Image (cartoon, rainbow, N blue to C red; front, side, top):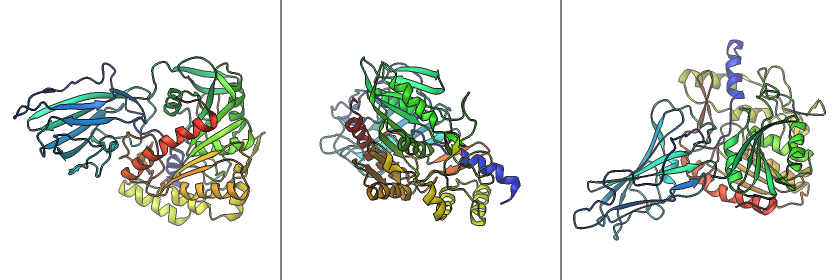
Length: 475
């Protein structure tokens, strides 16, 4: 590989993240759920009163909205539009054209659009199919907890109606507390109410720092959550190289001592590189009673530091000693594909690089995560078109190891063939499946917008039920 470009490639490889779609959407606050458009309730020709219903007026991320237009002439065309502005000032829109049914009703949960930004009967279609229409998108979204204001409009026979609703990342009553205590760095979210609750440690991916949106959402479902940082913040390693598993161990002990936490009901949630850490840490700490690993790895890979691919070092360590790992090697084919993508200004998928690394059978055997040691059930979520690494293949490797080793818990694998790396909460945009990396590169996260949306719709309630069943609590 040309050495003068290697640093740029490392930036790309170190930057892949796993985030909740829409987490950068930070609309202005204020009243929500009102009829804000001109003409709401106006009379159509023929004496009908057209109405647009979007319920509920505010919904926690992942919860459904119901859209209905009533009072339209049977068979009349009705255009629905959803729009919002993200935290970067980029406007996003989707649209769908329907014909009212014989009752004069349009209901996307029951009807297919005849044209538009999505196809088929889909109650979430208008939300996941939003695309950037103004400004420069930064790709996958960021970490804002601000409510996201979405305006849904309906146009039919000269009548224009609209309603504005809010997507919430954190319900009222949830407390956010920054933590810098005894080597534990992160953000604690306390659910509304009193008494002890199950706890969940949320581990971000290779972007570093804390990942608060997921923690805030799960706290809104009744869990004490700790968005734990393990590198990339003050007092922590600057790069994801030989991170001590004791970082997670300290967080577990810290939560056990917290007056709001049920010490025998602590779980780990991780995505991407955070899923790798969740599985490894759970295999060392029996206090962990459940693991959710999204887009996981079956092995310990090389750390994603600035010398990745040149000075091979593990991602994790225990008691000062690095864990065995699978090294990353850049061959000629990978180099050519990377520079070709750069030249065309196209997103580049890193999954082939990890596939190539997995051909090192000896390294894979020695670096395999001993998931059979986990003292509780494991839930895996993966996509068959993951552009970051072969999470589908590796989730199958994990399940095969759990079964062959006689893991005595009800483990679950949720795999979606046409989904990519980013499978998140439903009713959020999935049309941007790439991540902008500093240096003007974009990483291909993989999957189709519809495939990612279908995976989100199916997996989200199953994750919530898994946590409720195996940790208890939850709303």
